[in-house]
Length: 446
Image (cartoon, rainbow, N blue to C red; front, side):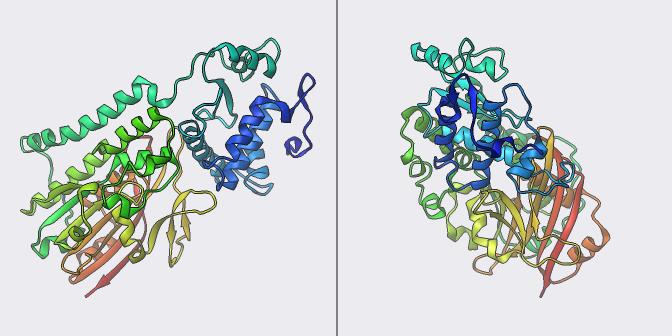
């Protein structure tokens, strides 16, 4: 085990101590910033890994040591069965991006945690006369990027000034506009009809209008970049994103975030979820109404049948029904990780299910729940997944897949009034995979 970073600071280069190093001073500012102030474990991760990089240039940092010295894991830690370091690295990467998009916008140096690495890299934010002095102070005769093992240092533009970001955003918006074209074309294709209508049957039986509420991609992106959650009342009142962005001092950042937050956009996977549901209803002669989350009023949730796509991170209306479900998507107040909490585990079920994300994919979880609407005059179907890809996988599986016999028996029983189906699915990054596993179910009969 490496214990070097738990020892008193020593000279890192020349006669300069760690405390005098501009990189370490920047790391301390980030650790005390709002982006990390309440995330103790992420703060320790940043301090530990940054100090290692500064004091051990060119020497790789070990996942095992991070697990023991930062995450509190035991000496028998096995990364193959415990991905805590990888998960926290993802969260730290997002918090660093949030810091440099807000409080740290004026920093001369950037701290970047590359994907697939636990070693922070220190980059020069821009070339200007003062930069040469910073380089010389950090390491005589060498630039910051060369010390961090980079081949080139140039002006590092903030994310909102990079053209590809805007191209990607416009592409997302185009996807949304293309939904109308998809609907127009689907009648010309010989798409197989869903073979399972069991999860839709209660809504089909009562003969009332069905409204499908699409998630809000802009809401999800802005919350992730800001490291904050939007208040439902402000969102419902139309105050998003303006109210949330009042604290952003940089006008360019605020303009970019306002643009992102004001778009009515969904991802490609969510378009597929929508199409699966529409085909399921239309196969039974029901044409649903489609609306965006930010265009919904609370009274709409009590009129007829409603389908809510997305978790509380992308569809705030889902939070109104969290206390009615057994598997709840919640935030850890210490680590700020989002996970599913099992209120009453049964059999081999776990108390906690934490989604994982890697450069190649990850494990996602989803709770598909049928509940009475707010006025008990219809039904509400929650498609509450940890990400858009698992939402797509789960809905396609439940409508078209070969469901386990016990689940089919539950769904096909008469007088089924409510149910929950909690599933796990492993998928490639940004690509859904239909290989899902049913972890647990809950149901109620009239």
